[in-house]
Length: 436
Image (tube, rainbow, N blue to C red; front, top):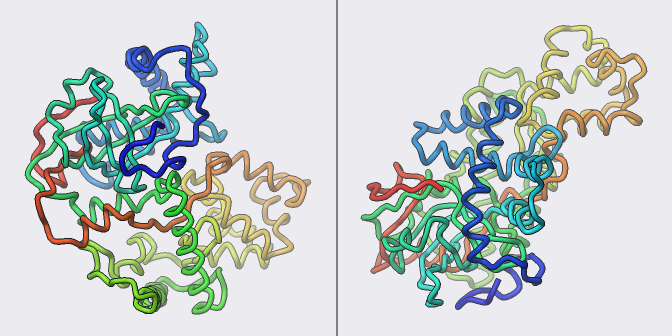
């Protein structure tokens, strides 16, 4: 993208610099029709099961108002991985008839590169009705067009804060569009740093990927945290009863918070009080409610996937160690659940197979394939059943606060402006709601 005031050149975009034959104005105008056709395509019965799963997950977090529904659908269409590892928008581009032009195809595929987070609004001053959004998550700036005309920005004033999603107009441009629902809110002086909002930011540290410095620091934090975990537990894989697992996790997080605080002081870096809404060691060590009645809990701290919890993992480990248990309905049902669960990656199955030479015997029983070999057939099995996890760019589980967001979180309130959000209900009074 073209360099903006305060932008880190060469970081905010990874797209080639060649210009498309269609102008930005033409692309923005064409975008509305294409997005409508894409959304119609996404609601076909073939995608019904996965879309329903996402909607139910969203409903578990609170009421499904219009903003949440549209945001969930937008994520499903552009980012959610299908069983084959592809996305809905990729299917649409491949199957659309009559065929799309090259510009249209590249524009649609470019929308997979979603940037989501808090944005501070700045005037663009370019005379074409754009607005500059300073992303408080990756600390970079983006020149944003309105999909439905410049009037939508009339209520957005400089120094307002917006929570939302933006996508490239086209990979070859440095221009962006708002994607999904927008609801402008007023009455707050700064981004709400409470748990509801910060959890959204922390939920996908991959949002930092455009800012290489923050991204590399996040990976280093994860590596340091994993090393501390291994130092405390003696391994990156442990199996514990759910009655004791929280206490051990709390111990880990207390040690880490103390280590990080000591490191900051040793560097001479000014220390700040904990950010409002920051999780305590007790909160970070808490297990999900449905894990408390599990037989065991497996903790795996992977270098790439970070720390994950696995329900009844001890039963699986015992069965892979003693394949005779594969004849027991309880044990084999747990394994079948792991293989069928769209939310579980290939990681626990890989680790079980790597720990136990008799893994092939267990998998033959599960799959009812007497000739199955883990060494020969295991990778194909995982790619078939866990395809959504293959091809995804690796991202750390940690997020790093950029300079501007740190300034807002740690300095006393001043004339920072108001807040706008695409997720009304947790940050203020809704004034305007617009859906693309």
